[in-house]
Amino acid sequence: MKKIAILTSGGDAPGMNNAVRSIVKTALAKGMEPYLVYEGYYGLHSGNIKLATEVNVDQYIAKGGTFIYSARFPEFKNPKIRLEAKKQLDNLGIEALVVIGGDGSYYGAQLLHEIGVKTMGLPGTIDNDITSSEFTIGFDTALNSIVENVDRIRDTMESHNRAAVVEVMGHGSGDLALFAGLATGAEVVVTSENIKSPKEIASIVKKQIKEMGKRSVIIIVSELIYDNLDKLSKTIEEFSGVVTRGMSLSHLQRGGVPTAMERVNSSLMGIKAVEYLIKGESGLAIGILNGKFTGTPILEALALPREDRHKFANIVNDLNQS
Ligand code: F6P
Image (cartoon, rainbow, N blue to C red; front, side, top):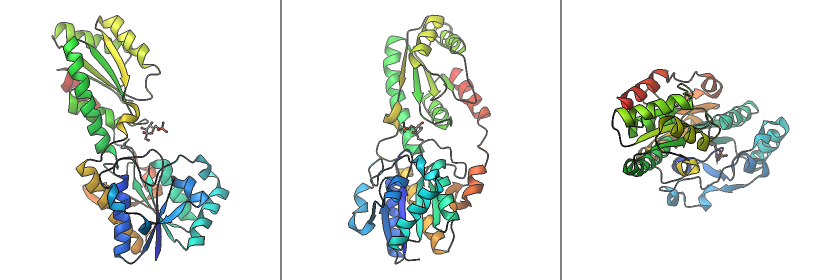
């Protein structure tokens, strides 16, 4: 195999740049010609592809986002669009494609594998919801950003004897909320494993402030659970008697300089992807399983059940409320 391409797809994640860098450099070291596809599957379809040697990939080592940009491109579900995208690779003589993205992006890589493109998937999403990897690219950095911001919010809530509802991302996965909850001591953490009504949250807030004498209460909630943060905060305030503010950390948690572990894991996953391609493998999802960097067939990876976090959710809430 001589020519390979790389794309990033779906929500950007810190660490994507490190993965791209290590794929490019490993490929060059193995005598391959690496190409960069700009703007994900959208750019693949429109032929926005550049020789990687035209770019200094080292300059992005400490930068969040993805320097080859990303896009959401649902049109890729259309078989005709996929064949047209494959044609763009064929025209340049590119045989393999490494896709860095979430589960939707993995599915695209699987479908390309089925029509003869050699593909590898790298788990790039802050959500930590790719079951074939214990950690996804972007999760550690997003988690650290959430923790830093919740600590700041704690300072001001503590000064005013208030409660704060802080909404974090996750797209159905509660990992950002649960890990941040444990790391910050948030008194309430609400995820899909552990949904609480506004009145239930209010009674915990009341107990923490009025009976246990705490100066502040932090309530971390996963996105997509409550429709309206202001309404939720007002109801908590009304039933607890504690002034409550609501805020979403929104896209602030997705940008930012990748942490050291993010850079290390993303780089090692990138190297692994090239190694598998050299061995002639295709249709694999690269990830960390039991501490080892490994490849799982994408279809198998997508069907793996998510780890049950009910017990973890209870542990976090019990520990932080005691
Ligand atoms: O998948 C990553 C993610 O950040 C999710 O946590 C979130 O639900 C979604 O993307 C937001 O997407 P967008 O930036 O397109 O609004």
